[in-house]
Length: 618
Ligand code: F6R
Image (cartoon, rainbow, N blue to C red; front, side):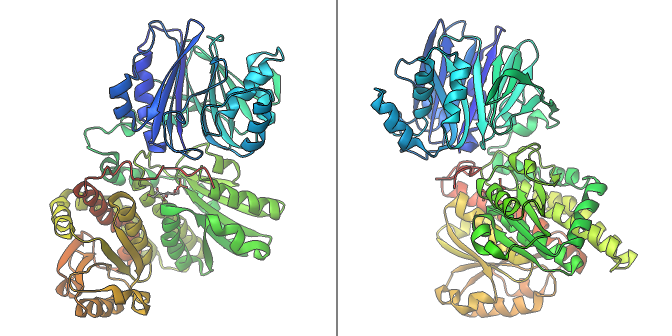
């Protein structure tokens, strides 16, 4: 995955500065190299290199554009074809250095096209798939057709996924963008400036008016104006619905925090308060569909998958039907012909752009000739996943920039819990008092997290200090908290580069316990639910073998606390209503632990090694 940002304007604005700031807001999408192109006086000016944006900026002054430039594009890369080097960085140019292309995605038939173009005399400079595009467009322009028609012809030859931004030295009034399976959005300051980006936060400080490009669409951007086309019909521009983005500008900035990850953890209470206001009607639709379903599957990747594990536990409690959770990348291979008509699939994705999640849904729809219902939970309005779904809930986390998902996890579990409670209501399986108690507990989750964040930072830092030398850990739990252990484990792996296994405490006795030696850190997730007593037994077993026990418990816990070396207390009552939602209220402790462990290890938690926020390649 990569990030693209660009603009075309008729205003006297500091275009270099805006482009640099904009691309920095997309650095979460990839950060192994970066480049910019400015179009001025029939020439293209390119600066690019391998490394992070700030390092390259120090060397190349990325914000210094030729005086009077009105059109510029920038790219931040997460390498797929060819290592992160200067030559492989975007933009890529054609032979005559007239056409510049910036690409997010993968061109699948690139070997075949490269051979064809080389036979025609094109000289390639890089190892990337992206470089095919400028040469192919150049080839079509040689036949005498206009820039946008050449782009359209070139696209007809290309297989794979692409979001492209293209400019031409001799077309000062146009940026052309096209989309197939990789996100692209257009921002408009009517009559003045038009922006293109891989994600909305890049232009949010300048405009809230936004258009979301669909697959196989082209947009031709002029200053303060934009035309949309189907890629194979450029004669008539098409109408597109404008979206007004409600996110605050602050949400896309660090706002005084050292890292987005920390800021986004602190935003959890407000993100959840907004998500608690999701329309009752939509929740009821989801609830009724699940109640009527023959088979139910829930699918996602990474953190979203762990949210599914917690959510399916809560929904099953009230639905009394089995919900199978399948990692999206295995959806097709695991289900195959077992996928039956009248199934319902819940697809969960923060970005709505994870390629394996989208592919799982597309495969199911194709196989069952649409005789399947897709319920989608995403954080991004208009994302690709929403287009393949029958019903959509948009979580209200606001933009999440930190590569490690934090606040969106809380809002995903919360949304699934709200669906679960809707089911409990219409099935009338609980008394009014019980329903009220569950709602009270769920509505209290933002306050619990807020209080926890106010009171526990020093404790977490201190625990991290003492864990400093440990390279291996366990997070152990039972029941619903296994989801918390796995998500906590994922956070520590990705941001702190520590190996940790999030595991079932019961299952850990069937092998993993053999790793435990004196001082081996084991973090037990221990809300006072029906698994608590058995978990206490596991705590004692691991302690007896020398494990250093850190427990995450509720405020007035006594038993497990008594066997622990360190304790993190979550300020919530000790009852079953609150415990059911502990995947939401316990996770901030583990997120903070990972955050401070990353700092302790000298790592940047916002930009973990080898990762990008959204995985749009298989
Ligand atoms: C981990 C993380 C990833 C994502 C995963 C799915 O912190 O962010 O594991 O959860 O790539 O992404 P979405 O939810 O956008 O489909």
